[in-house]
Figure 1 (tube, rainbow, N blue to C red):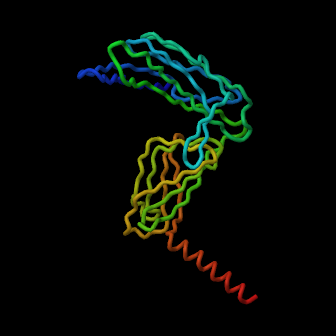
Figure 2 (tube, rainbow, N blue to C red):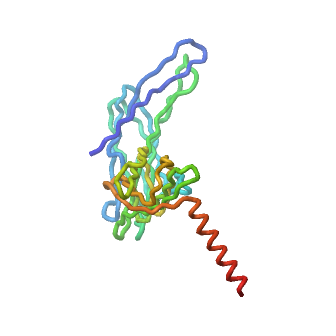
Figure 3 (cartoon, rainbow, N blue to C red):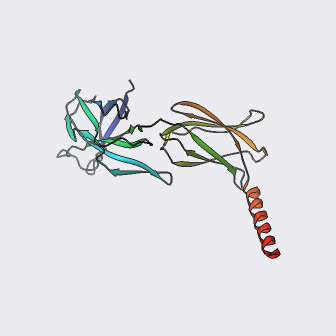
Length: 264
């Protein structure tokens, strides 16, 4: 079972003193994501206070969608979390329970985000300023009733500088976690460019555009995209067009249309 351990340094900014104080505190949680379904309506997570001070935490579960490449979170009661607030003594473990409160979608995976927020304690009498606290965000996915489909579609163009613009669309019905991206010459196998992102989640039905540096001396037309995700590696062969070629096609189509109109 995967476990996520995150350490927080809580720093108090002393306005009236030349000395700074800092104390280390940490929380660990396992597992780091939750998968629910029509057969599995609930799950439990273990949150442990690994520090030497009492911690008060608050939980919140939000619906997770994406729009124009940005994550959108909204209050929702389709999935419930308990307890909403808890106090953890040093070394104590708290069980956090998550349960479905609505029907599973028939065709598409639903996504949510569980936030666990450490509430800042009141400052001591001799300290004033800002206290930094921890907020953890965990993915919660609810599988569709129907067959799960993993499928992505790619489009590629080159801009005026010669850089490669890749558009990735998740046309499956579940999320995909993009972990790496490599672009090769489809004929020779030569590596043209590479992208090592932080793992990025693309929800079902969403798209993402990525701009990659491409040597202007490469004039090929076909690339092989090797994309790593949470299920393994997927390879795709893609034909690319430059903006000049795309514009030429449009101009030609417009010219033909005007000629046809003149003949009429």
